[in-house]
Image 1: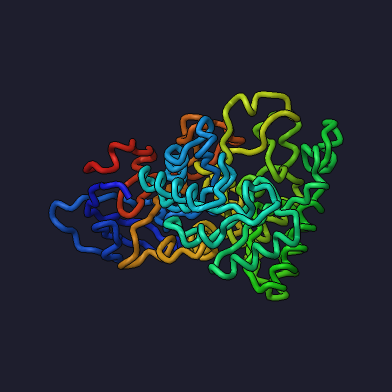
Image 2: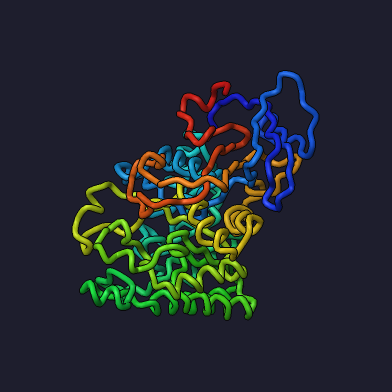
Length: 442
């Protein structure tokens, strides 16, 4: 990664997820001591009284758009957005131009992440060449490349061919990897615009049936079982999908799943004004689906929260609904929405947030050092939160290139006060540091 000064400092009086207070001393990018620490003369100190200290968040599902989509986002701007949201590791999806289907592109993305220096950028490799669903991509070559790819996905498109999916699962097993499936049977969603329900009917939009997602999850769970391979389900959105996941886990199938913050908070009712900021794939579902997704995250049926951060240029969202792009940005707001949807409703507490946004996604991705418990000898990837803060979220709180957030103008709880990536503060006092500040004293 880029050269920078690794200052020694101590965080004083922070609350861990379990409520216990601690000091944390960092030196050379590593946690060197925790507990009630004796002050050292001249040592830089961060007063964290009233703040929550967690391991940096890990996102399994980030669209950085580069190469090919730099008008919406770049690795640099997406990394800044991630740091603003408390993330220290993000996984870059492969639906770029060209697609990340071989060592060249994944190594390029990883190098751009190292150069940016805000977070650890881990490329995800495509399952099929060009993400066309016809021919297997270079899975083994990407796994053995300098990018060390361990997650493979055609996200944005489903691996609809069962034979190709089975082969992908077999190859992923060879490299101790995982196939992350965008579960959407394309023949059931052609032309679909919104969840197939009352709102779509009222608005005259073609419905997107829940079974299009659920059928693929069921099929792929059986394929994973038959190959003894690992399957990860992207952005679960329906109550029926949760039931399939429960069934698969009871059978001992090696399956994990993620849910987005927007599927935990928003419903298809948000689309009644034809505001395309609420157009997303999979679509926003019903209040009943949201309730089931929340319960599934709380009981561990759904393993992790992932943002599906999907930036788009303004013109892609300002057209009529049917022509507008699908997706919304979400890195800066993820933990805020999880606090609103899960913590303030009493469904989970902060240790479970740590599990869903840090430790469990790191386990799924096979990361050794990321999101480990805050302890001596661990890399200093940390986030300080003020859970008591509340503010009206606006464009000034976005750090990426695009502004297609569904939360603009909404009151959200919580605030990321500071983010530390390998001991370097990428966010201080709520502000993302500029690239030329990352190597400077602070």
